[in-house]
Image (cartoon, rainbow, N blue to C red):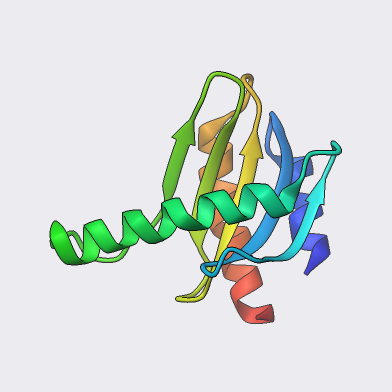
Length: 116
């Protein structure tokens, strides 16, 4: 499972980490070009993914969450569900390309779904 994550970071401009996270907040697998804590990134974003999924599916009747993008001053994260228990996390810097993140992230999620 490490190879698709490593390739995703290489393919997306501005990407510096990719991980498979469980909605329980646990890191399954990850690759980073920095020393940042992927366990913390996954744990914090699992809560955001659960909250967004609950709001869309139950409160807003919007259906299943297909993707989530959160942007801060120095950090952006693209999240894509892999299956009901796991999601793909792609960490991006300020010069990132969201279009590439979405395109390659979707393809990586499909590949990872077959491996999980």
